[in-house]
Length: 342
Image (cartoon, rainbow, N blue to C red; front, side):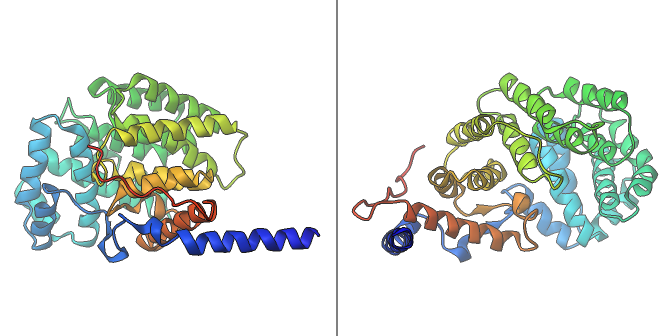
């Protein structure tokens, strides 16, 4: 009798998947239309020029973010341009020759140096060697929080006692109290180099930051990052109540709803949110976020799970549709994507 019931449930699940999976693809971009880490309209031309060995468009872009105090844009552009320089360094070398004291150049050089050090087998030694570059990036830009985000990333890999971390964090928030990149860097520091800080302390930090931030601030997604770190812990995660995980996910869902579908600005937050919702087996919520992502896949968090982040995203997207289809009654038509909600 038990085997008969198991077989029956399997048959029903298969029938539901066959009936509903294809219809749940309505409104989703085709696989070949999904982009990985697509640059925005300002960054794209700078990357194209850098590919030709020209640094001036990137220099103008970063100078504009500094002059406009557009710190979130500045942080994103610095990370993307520094990553590009890792594969195509000629334009950055030319910039260093022409304008070695340019504050935007110094910031890019520090970001690139810290990233290189983190990927080195001799991480601690390499990070120690680039300390002067990190210091040099902060000196000419007293109001810029981004060098302090770089400093937090640098400190995370070195044996820095807690007091210097607190000093770095104070410098960052004094310049921009709700800067998302600095908050992410601080959370990662607490998780990996914070003197044995447990997951509960990371959740406390993330939840306090989110409570203090505006409803549409990306800092609202910080608890979702805490959930991801907790669920990804290789050492066996500390017990965290399921209600706390769901509350963080709910906060991320609320943040996502404040942005238009297929908006590239919150794309990384939405990709992370899908990953967390899948781990929590909240399939319907995950499908809604897949729809809101549209064509904008991001390397993080999928590069933590696979060497092919785009392929991993597409695989998860298909899996979410299958799970939703399998839970939809045979006589019910699953809800299609809304025509527009902005």
